[in-house]
Length: 252
Image 1: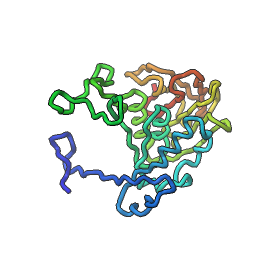
Image 2: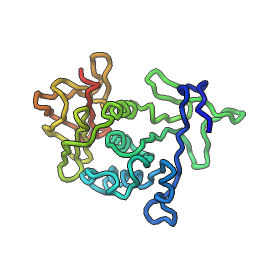
Image 3: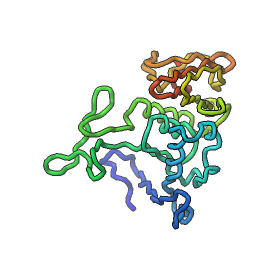
Image 4: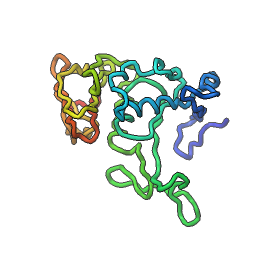
């Protein structure tokens, strides 16, 4: 297999990343383990189980041991993905399991419809707007502010584990990633309002879900962390995303 083409923006000597699609939800005649020695595999159970949790079918508290204990293949072999909802993607990018893929797509009216095309059936490029979102029939989920900010979170906390887990016994959860980042989720019908350990140095941080750091300012909520690492964490029950995330890179 040849290296990737540098004329398309790939770095010199970049290698293709090949993934095997094996649909194994637990009761299949063919299992993912038959192919794991060859490389990465699509972990469909990840998508199915995270969907159950964030749709309210399972309590979020059970995500504390998210990973192989749920019947997933080992993290280094698992290509993980979700196909709906910001909060599912936020958890996927925040929790250290698998090789994360963000699904990014086009709008369609029926399942047989292809991507946006011109009269000659050439695929049309997306229109990029000033706010970094896109149009022209494309959805571009990877350009949504919450998503690309969470990619920044994932990069910031790389190499750390999950610590200082907190939950309310049901559908409010929070955890640190080492001393690099903190994230909280609220799926209850009442507000998330807790003093929690963020594992971050004292200071003021910009929530990357409700907004983002712009220079020395924040366009979203601000979180004040005390000398003991604790902060008042508030996520209203009526907030659109139901997530709050901060990390060292967004200290004001």
